[in-house]
Image (cartoon, rainbow, N blue to C red; front, side, top):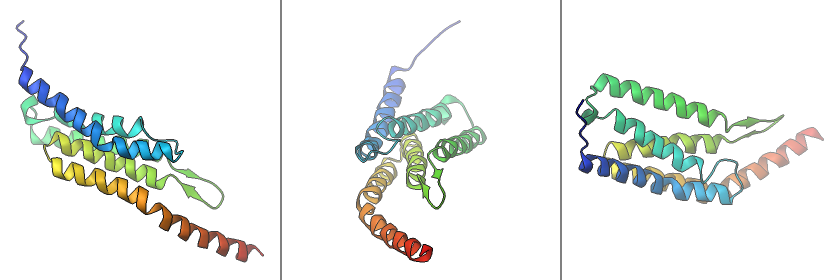
Length: 155
């Protein structure tokens, strides 16, 4: 059995994995800093794994478009499952939806890197970070108004 390894292709794949990891690391860092349960480990791992799965299903891996489509479908379902675990429902409150959406987005970042869509990946990561960071104040303000309405309704 003859074994050959294309070092150039292997190095390119490693670089893509590192790019996927690096693009979403700030999102994970921010979530961890804000004391969310999902953060600095989960987000980069999801991006890196998504990138890896798509690299495995790339045309250079001798897979056709149908196989690539099935890998993407499985990836979306799997990431949705992980994100679903981040959502918690209590009596009158649902938490973790933004985290779940961010996990899903993180998977697309990794997939974009695998497909050499670096601008798309960077924009998705940037917009995810900005949405979580800058819109937190807006969300807190809106949630504060909702809490006042609930207290008024209970009286």
